[in-house]
Length: 141
Image (tube, rainbow, N blue to C red):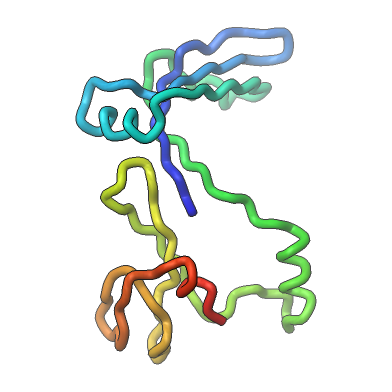
């Protein structure tokens, strides 16, 4: 699952070996911020950045932050060990679509031409089946 939050930079200050950036969730000021505030009313992100990337974080500016689970290297290694060419792609494409729930996105597998069994969130031309993807339906082979 992908989760999107919206944070505002409170400070970007120089420290011994770079910059320290502090961010807090947005609290209002727009309908979008109001909906993010309902989902993430408190919290903080504190970063020590040792590269020029710190310049991108301007105090007072708002940023969308995407949280996505990182692939498990051990699981990926196990999956690729038995496949020819070392690929884990089973002939499916992944599509990310936003939902109406503020701060979240859903990831589903899109159907390839000729595949009549894949489930998708939205019907596309050529789809033979179109049903909302569920956690169970995303675990198909």
